[in-house]
Length: 102
Image (cartoon, rainbow, N blue to C red; front, side, top):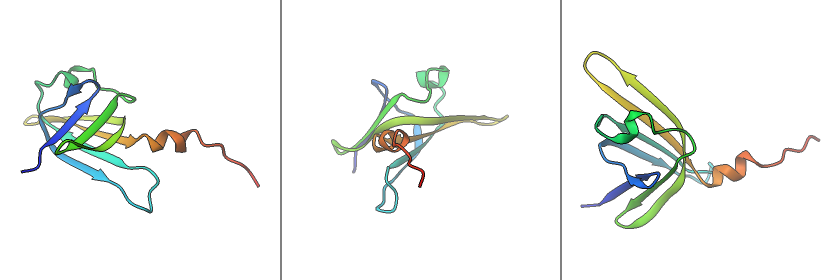
């Protein structure tokens, strides 16, 4: 069985239910989407925010290295959870690239 380790900041992030990594030749940077419902996780107590480093390892191999982009929480009468999106480090290069008119 494949071991998947997600680290956000310096801590291993547990309690996630769904993880999606997207990479492709048509997209310059990789994206991550993670859904979690474990409200015992310290990050759900207000510490999770944009800019925190994220890395994902599959069987000890680094597959994603980037930063949290957005954090969305959702609560209703029965459920509570968060959805985290992140972009890899290449996105920093894209974000700071100079644009030239003409």
